[in-house]
Image (cartoon, rainbow, N blue to C red):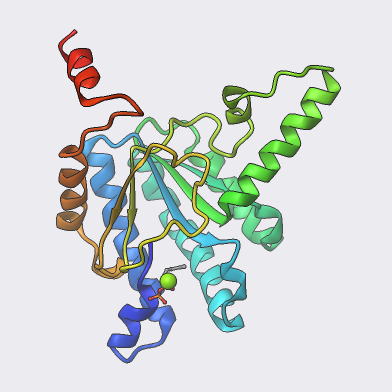
Length: 230
Ligand code: IPE
Ligand code: MG
């Protein structure tokens, strides 16, 4: 979700105004994903590098996260959204950590959209923490099986399928340390639209673009065709 700051700047407003507007977009996108049957939606809300932003922006964002979690909890439950956080939450204040845990528990039985918020998340961090856990377990069990599927059980998205579609708003054409391990075969979609301006039509464009692509997973088009006809 990129472009909140530039959106605000263009309106001669402080960056936090853009982040507040960005939350409105988050709400709309969740609603749409839930209604069209998207099973999992992962939002990159705060990267491990975002701590380097000006102090006031970081504390403003933390306040905003707290507020939104409190304000939206009921409506998430009502709409069957299951909320989960990934990332190193130990760096957050204990009140924020508590709030996260509360909302996770509250929404745990949601049968609709599974919403994953990446907060203080970094793809390299995820790979490294998974590697540490895998090695620890292998040592404990005196086992030497280190393979992809085993590794996959230690990343923070262990219970989730790999993403089908990655959307980055705000004009940048890079991954910026998002789900590095998980994105190996994900379709990448970049748009210049700034996050606060991203809306249902924009999401539909991204989905249409995704639908027009052939995903071959290393195979040839002929093999894919044969598979479909089988
Ligand atoms: C993304 O918008 C929001 C967060 C990282 C929380 P930016 O804040 O990166 O907006 P720009 O890139 O400065 O426009
Ligand atoms: Mg940015």
